[in-house]
Each structure stands twice: as C-alpha cells, then as structure tokens.
Image: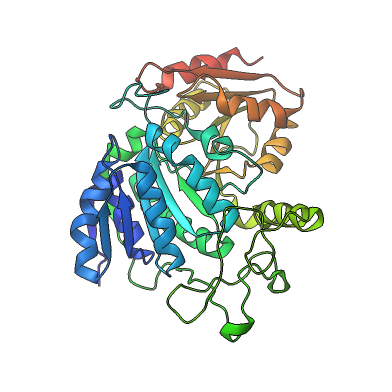
Amino acid sequence: MSKKVAFLQGNEAAAHGALYAGCDFFAGYPITPSTEVSEVLSAELPKIGGKFMQMEDEIGAMAAILGASLAGAKVLTSTSGPGLSLKQELIGYGCIAEIPCVIYNVMRGGPSTGMPTGPSQSDVMCAKWGTHGDHPAICLTPASVQETYEEVIRAFNLAEKYRTPVIVMPDEIVAHMRERIVFPEPGEVEVTPRKFPTVPPEQYKPYDTSFGDVPPLAAYGSGYKFHVTGLNKAADGFPTTKADLVQAEEERQVRKVNANVDDIVTFEEYLLDDAEVLVVAYGSTSRSARYAVNVAREQGIKAGMFRIKTFWPFPDKQIKALAGKVKGIVIPEMNLGMCSLELERCAQGKVPVLGIFRVDGEPINPDQILDKIKEVK
C-alpha cells in the first residue's frame, strides 16, 4: 500500500507532526509567521478529542500548556520572536519544574517587531540563554518541510524522555515553503510515552532521584498528590534553601541533557571525507550551502558541509574534530554571527572562521557562500 503524501507548508507539517506524536493540547496566540500551526490544530484537535485554546497572549499560552502537561497531556505552543521573549519566564518555570512541553518558534527578523514577514535565524541564542539561571536547553533546527514534521515528533519524544521544554526553530523560509511530504504509517515512527510512576500514591515524590536523573511524572487527577513550584525544591517538590540540595538539584537538571548529547544531538555530513573547506549551516541556509559546495567541487575546490540539526546541545565534539582537518570554516547565517561565535569556541584558534551574515530579510544565496569558500587559503 502506498503511503499518504501531501503538498504542505512547513507550519502545516509541524501541526501534523505534533498530532502523530500524540499532541492532545495546544494553546497559542496568533503571530506571524507561525499562525498556520494553530489554524491546523484548531480544526484537527477537536476531531480526536483534544483541546485547542487561543489565549489572550503569549504568556497565557505558555502557562496553559504547562498546566495541561502536568495534567498528563502532550502539549504544544507556537510562536515567533517577540512571543518567545514573552514566554521566557514560564519556559524557565518549565525547566526548573521539569514539565515536558514543545515550543515551536518560527524565526523572523528582530529584535522587537523587526520584520514580521522576513526570514531570520536570530533566535538560536534565545533558545539557550533567553531565560535566567542555569537550565537544560534542547533546540532543533529543521531545514525542510519533511524534516519539520519529523523533528516535531522528535521534540515531543525528547520532551517526554528528559522531562523538559524542547524548542523547534525553523526559520520563516522553512515554515512557509511548500514541499512534498510523505506521512509515516501509525507506529512506523517511534513515539515516546510519558514515564508515569509505579509506586503507590502515598510514596510518590515528583523529584525522587532514586529513579535516576529523570524521575517519573504523575498526572494531576490520576490519584497522585504532589507539589510543583518555581522555587528550588526537595524531592517532594516543596521549596528548600538547603545549599547541598539546591546545588545537586541544579546540576542534575543540566546533567540530564548534557550527559546525553549523543542521544540528543543530530547532524548531517555532506562530502566531508576529503574536505579542505568546511561549510557549517542550519535551517534553510543549508540548502544554499549544499548547492555552493557542489559548485565548489565542480571547480576543483574540496568543500564539504556540516549541517546542524540539533543546535542545542551544540555539536561541540563533531566541530572540534572537523576543525583539526580543514583549512577554514565558513558559516552563513541570517543573523550577525551567533553560530560563528560557537564555531570559534570549538575551533579553538586552529583555523579561521569566516562568516556571512544577513539581517535584511533576504536569504543567503549560493554565490555568496561560494565566494566566501574561495577566500579560504
């Protein structure tokens, strides 16, 4: 039997990916250029008994998905730059309270209102450093419509597996382009269920580390009573100021991601076996980068591409290894050098890092990348 195919926009694919992953609650506020996600889910969620809520603002939307997740739902909100800024305090709450949720953020020009209809890649640092304090960060940057569908599913899986917020960050080009997508059959792609407690309700502690760095999470209304707070807390969820408990708790929350980078970090390597020039790219810019690498090869230049699919945790290990094999690194991105700073950190001065930065609402084209490749000596 042939699989179902469709011609979809990236945002539409994201909504359908969420449904495949088991999303049964969405709360959001309309914002360009991500509104199509809420449009699709407003129609589709009621059909499966799910809940759709248009909230009064982005803060309310983030609060709503955290509450629904604590009640046992798989949850999603969608937004763009200014909305992501408004959500930050509650994203931090989701981190410290360890509440699984997915935030789908389409990157547009900024800061502030910026260029609402133009593409950008300027939110990637916000995914890691947007909220205050030390906390885990997982951010995925898809480059196609099919991959957007798949990465949204993976985001739900990671959120449940590591009990943490996960951000999916396509740029506006990926979000609004239309491409052929092939839908997997039910059960074909793994969907991670939530790890619920198996102990009796009276013995349950929501942050009991005897179960490991990711304790099981009960659902409100399922017979388990437990406390959730944005304060540093003990195993029972109630606030604590004991230095040893606070230190251990903060370290555990970061460790549950950092100790599992090999499970979380994904990337694509293209023509890197003999590459002398390394092009690092992500999102829609990687499509121009691939074309430029192919043209460079035709002209006798040994170029290759490393495509970042998981931006956070950053693929430090892979970049450090590649930096020791090439003459230079080229990084095209639609911002003023956010990823380039990470590459310079990983390269450790071994090779030059040459950036191509655009914030004018236009995509980076292959000729720009090819010209920069030729600058590497």
